[in-house]
Image (tube, rainbow, N blue to C red; front, side, top):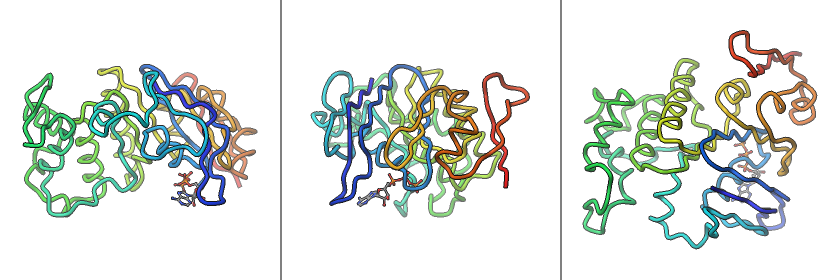
Length: 260
Ligand SMILES: Nc1ncnc2c1ncn2[C@@H]1O[C@H](COP(=O)(O)OP(=O)(O)OP(=O)(O)O)[C@@H](O)[C@H]1O
C-alpha cells in the first residue's frame, strides 16, 4: 500500500507538483493521465521512491519509502521507465535475468525465491513469446520487441507493485492492446497493484480501475474512468473538447472521439 500525503515537488524555483494526496491499495490498476508537463513522471518518481518530495510524505506499507534499502524496495516495486533498455550488448535472456538482481547475493547467486531462478526467467520469456529472440542482442530488436523484453525483466523481478511510465509509446495499436492485456492478466493472477502513465485516454479508460488526472501539477480529478473521462473535465484540462461516448461493447468504459 502506498500513501502519499500532501506531497509537492520543486526543482530549483519551479513548483512541479503541489498538494497531492493519493492512496493506492490492493489489487487495482491506477492510471495517471494529464497533458505534457503536468507532472505525471515526477509523481511516479515520488511514488516509487526514486525521488524525494520537497514537502509531504510517501509511505509504503506504513513505513517511509525513503527508509527502504534499494534491494528491499526492488522486491516491492518494479518500474518500467519510458526508455527502458538503454543497455547495449546484452542478449534478451541476459536482460530478463537482470530482473532477478534483488534476490541475488554479491556472488550473483539466488538467496531466497519461490522458484528456481532459471524457471521464472524461462517461464517469463515463454509468457511474452520471446523464445525465438532469447539469444538475440536487444540492440537488434524493434521498438515493440524491446518493450516486451523490458516488461519481461520487471515480471521476473516479482514485485508487488508495478509502475509503468508510458508503456505503450512506440507500439502499434495491436501491440498496445497486447501489452495492456499481458499487464492486466499478470495483475489479476498475482493480485498486483499497477500504476501506469498513459497518454491514450481510450486505453486508460479500458484498462484502469481508477484514473488520476493531473493539471499543472495538481490533481484535477480522481475516480473511475466513467467519472474522469467526461467531456467537460477533459476540456478543462486539455484545452480541446472531445466527444465522449460509451464503448459499444464494454460497460462503464467511456471512449473519446476527437472533435475540431
Ligand atoms: N529534474 C528536473 N529538473 C527540472 N525540471 C524538471 C525535472 N524533471 C521534470 N521537470 C519539469 O517538471 C515538469 C513536469 O515534468 P514531468 O516529466 O513530470 O511531466 P509529464 O506529465 O510526465 O510530461 P510528459 O507527458 O511530457 O512526459 C516539466 O515542466 C519538466 O520540465
